[in-house]
Length: 388
Image (cartoon, rainbow, N blue to C red; front, side, top):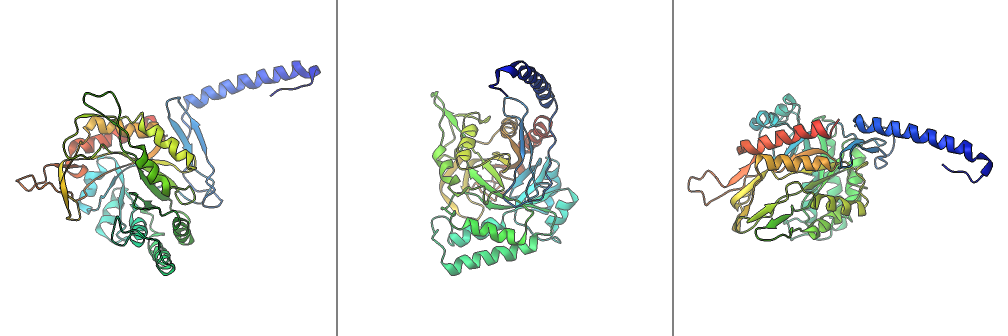
């Protein structure tokens, strides 16, 4: 605060000094005391999610209040989770690993999976809306995408509305998963898909996920290998107009032979760059909370997909150790992630090089004590250091 009036210089100087002292006191208190997070919806329009973000440290720790809109993040945030957790018998084991979100298709309130989830305070991030979108745009899968006809688009919107009508009142559904791997530019149809969801359910947030490969340094090199173009292509489909929350999934590279190098598990290079690229697209982590999707799997090797399709050649992908997974999870939270969903619990991948038939080359949360330990340790670190 300044004044151009010479006669009031002394008065204004005293006022400035007073505000400066008060500001210093308030800043000290704010840094010493974690802010509380309000996840309940407030009055307002769906996309007017004005909220407050307070930096609590210079290293990226954030305390976030999401509000000012009718979308509720109450069941989605400050939780651990797992992709493809779809077996009711696995729910107790998952819950013991600090997993409270199951990124899988909703089964209905009376299904054994849902009943087990209720008993263990677990929630769906429902992938079916994503499936409706992707297989309408690309009926034969990746590589078959084409613009929708008027009739096909109307069918997609009708199917979305019909489906959301079945899920909107179930409190175990925390959110709708809308985007995953980049198959094509869907941005022309996403506004209408989002409006179709909101015409039926104004509360449950949408989650859009984008792939940012982990960086790694090959043995004998000092240069970090990154793949930012992959992320830039993926966020072609991002807009705050239809993504209420943003998930970033980051894995080490899948190669035709085991990786000979060091993976940057703390993501101190790639994650800040990914967030910078998102901000250039209009993302605001005070309005669209960040969800981290760490690598909780590995292949040594993988020869077949979960759908039974055999790969042209084996794929090797270095799994993290328990400590490395904890490091990656903690890094996500350091840079603002408000929940974690590990990929993957069980995706049906196979290793036909294993003569025992036990798929010994496949390491995932369901069969790895170390990965479950890393998930549990990472979530605990986020709760103690970054989440109120």
